[in-house]
Length: 160
Image (tube, rainbow, N blue to C red; front, side, top):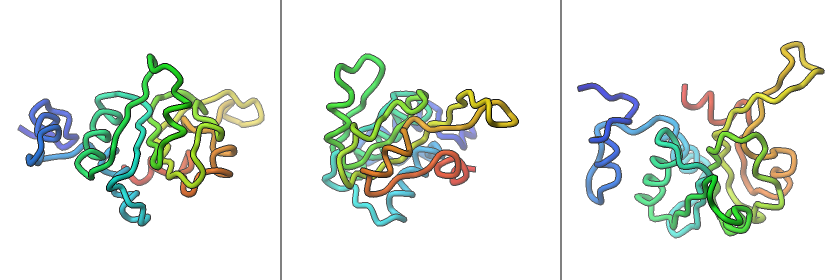
């Protein structure tokens, strides 16, 4: 059958197995890896932290990072002291679905940050009454990170 999103258990199973290739990869996780490659960011041997464990982004991107020889840690809602873990990362992939959860103080200087989150927050100054923000506090993070994707305009357009 067709599984262009790469979410079928067979595709995820092949993604998890060493030496196997799924027929299709989930587009957002694949896009995150492609962004790192095209930006000249080395993955091999790096400490990568994925914030979020969803079947759509968190789990598949973790598996893709492992295939690229990164050391991967997943931070989720039950992780104790997530900021301490995130602070050790050379690469951060934020996909938690929590607006501006990751602060600049959580980020190791020079780290690469991919913000997959898209969250609507109230903003009475906007005609719509809201604005879109990521899972990372961009204003704080851009002062520390060596490379970061914005929200909106970062990962979203790349996956369309």
